[in-house]
Image (cartoon, rainbow, N blue to C red; front, side, top):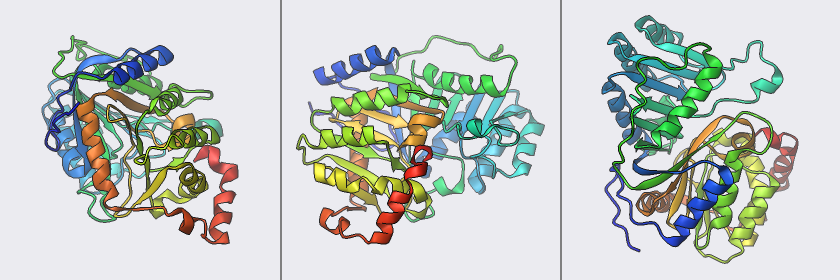
Length: 402
């Protein structure tokens, strides 16, 4: 089936799902127990030049509520722009709630929180390290969520900091993907915010500003919203990844900032690669920000390439997107990296999307990213020095926390 790809940053019109797409949807619903929603309109947004204007436009148009949750809220002009936008809406009488992770957003400028609180923004912190047990400190809120008026939502990988500004043209402009959502799936994204707000801000969870109106169905995308929780044990997010990866029949593509899975998921990826598809690819970041996580993932490059996978390193800057596509028909996009921390420890939210048009745009982005990447050559990789190999092995004791 041929689907016309819409222009950049435009909503994607959905085509009728294939039999494989319908089967994948039912597998996910049956194994996760989370009903997929229909009629959603999705707009893929690439890099800060597209992401931030769309988010700020939504905030500016808010009439009743703005809920923003982020792991990273750092410094720079974009941090000030968001603070002023949130403060302005609160001063106009809009209920504005901001939930910051106590570790990831610790670098926010105090004058920005002061500005927002004076205007009436309700600010809460997720598990500030002070007086927390070591166990709780290790479980962070990595979700990135913006919900406006309960009608439009955003989620993906972007943080509020100058690193995400621009268009991934150099190391100071990170590469990322975010999604604008209109339709019934907004409820699932809003629930991710509500879950964490309930922990951090005891009291009334909703008020008269929350209308809980029926959603229109402006598009045709089927979306399942899946949350990962900061808890111990097998998570829905792991089930999602397991089902999507094992369901691939023709092609599997993964772009991730941090590739540090456990042995189970490495074996699963290798099993998929052995099916012999020439276009099976994994796109990786190669920047100092990856640190130990990069070393932990490199340990598996040899096994993956031997199985038939192609591993790429993105060249221009930090690859911070978290996108997986399958067979050109389905995609997983959100806040979760392909590492133990996201799959085991942190609060995450992702969209499982069954939609050929939406997936085609993400695949096109992947192709364009590959043009700026370097493939791992197995023969050359096997000749890497003993010092590098020793560092990879040294990550073993802490791999569970990466």
